[in-house]
Amino acid sequence: MEKNFVIAGFGGQGVLLAGEVLANAFMLDNKNVTWYPSYGAEMRGGTVNCEVVMSDDEVSSVNKKEADYVIVLNQASFDKFECKVKKGGYLIVNTSLAEQKENRADIHYIYAPISKMAVDLGNVKMANMLALGILLKVGGFLSVDILEKALDVVLPVHRKNLLPLNKNAMEIGYKYDLLVAGC
Amino acid sequence: MVECLAGKKVLTKGNYAIANAAVIAGCDCYFGYPITPQSEIGEFMSGKMQELKKAYVSAESELAAINMALGACATGKKAMTSSSSCAVSLMQEALSYATSDELPIVLVSVMRCGPGLGNIFPSQGDYNQSTIGGGDGDYKVIVLSPSNVQEAVDLTYKAFYLAQKYRNPVILLADGLLGQMMEPVEFSEYPYPEIDNSSWALSGAKGRAARIIRSYSPTEDFQCEHIRHLFKKYRIIQENEVMFEELYTEDADIVVFSFGSLSRNVKATVKNLRAEGLKVGFFRPITLFPFPDKRISEIADRVDKFLTIEVNMGQMVRDIKLAVNGKIPVEFFGKPVGSWPSVEDIEVAIKGAMS
Image (tube, rainbow over the protein chains, first blue to last red):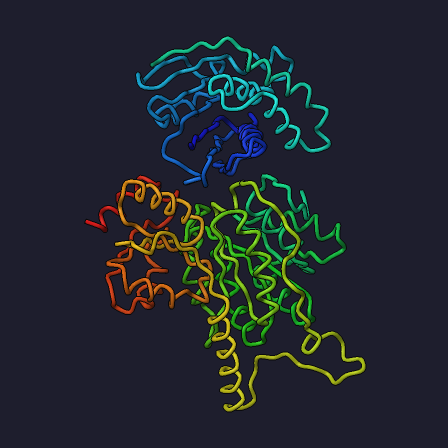
């Protein structure tokens, strides 16, 4: 079995980090996994995305035309990636920064005001971990526990103080009552 | 970042993995000039080499970087540089000198796209640059082509070993995709023996006669003899160091060739087609020099057709045609630059070649 994930947003939203945490979680779960980034020259504000591929066998390709799961954290990413969700796949939309609109009838749309939820939690930067929590609930392919362990692996020593807040964000995302539309 | 963690997997970016492997392989000196998509190698080395009290120099140009590495190699130290495409072009003269001077330099070349400045998109356009080269004279550089991050680590170890063993430059030919992607890897101990270089290294002439390493030849006979000596060495390399990966070639009607990280996509496609019952085989040269011509020629004796897939306009396909020597048709499928052909695209190409 092979599944791929795209996480997209603007620079500064922690898109690459979220992908790195997800990829580490699959590694800890003894899967084969790859992580591949795509970004412009900007450090902050430009569009950025990464693709994570998880497989029981060798990963077939790291950069695919379509994805099983896509998280879009802003409107530009929604516009770019809505068409790249595999038929029957899932598009998780941050409705704080992207409109709630279904242009396709063959995919699942999952809506959550991710940025607002992060602000309510006390830090807008938690949007990426909230989104991962939601992804896990939608997909059910990993436990929150493994995701939290992966976060611990990824965070450098001088950022370990942020671990509880990030874990909290993942759990809130995981417990969020999903609003699903589409097929 | 880790150094050596045998038995433990860590998710690591290709460039960092190569740099870390170079440290484990005992690299004493790193000289470099930044260029995307390989800058993380220099970034990693800038911290790690200082920490280990080894040499790191951010050179003023690529020309300077590789010539510094040549100088360090001449003293018997393990030295490396890393760069990409248009900047590796600037290093061709030094590679020619390094082969003539028999200096064991390791060059990590992470392909972006050319010609000229091109752009940072991944490509496989530097197969010719690596295997043929743009330096003057008759020379060969050992070229290793990893297909995933773990292999990039293992072949970095091997690059240092082969360079020392044969006193010849080695290019580790990666690409932007491999350099930028992350994958779980394990860093074992350096698995090769250390090579004694006390018979030639310029280590200071105290207590012994002075030595000179130079590529200038005073006479025609001397130069003739020198080149013959080099080619005797290349023949030994050709006989002993060929590496390749081969799958389902025993009963194949067609065998599909690729190198580097694109091979992942090609191999997956071949596996899918086998599951459909199509008799497709897969072959990947790991050493681009020495090229596995002998094995490729053997396979050509019992297969109808070869197909070569590359992200360039057809470079390795020439070496395959030379190995096949007209025995069977060799077709090519490729694109100039950018995202690797998908499994779906490759499937169409293979089925097209079979029809």
